[in-house]
Image (tube, rainbow, N blue to C red; front, side):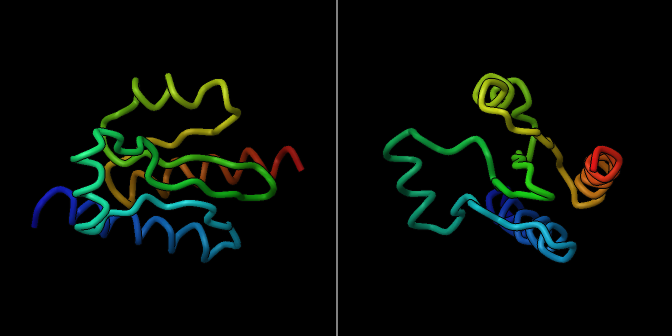
Length: 105
């Protein structure tokens, strides 16, 4: 399976984790052929894969190793950024995020 296909599958699994506990997806990166062709031609591929809300706070999910690029783009916009390369990695970080949010509430 190619990398882009894996990214799409992982993105869908992460979206399910978020929505199963009441989170809301605002944006998810398109990964189909038309989107990949557009990104290739325009050289404007989005960094974030998912933008979502949980308990009123927005956060972004970046799949892969784009931490430096992601931090540069989103630090100033108030995002909590989760960088992951597997569902287990995402769940671990997301559980920490949930615990922090619930402690604050």
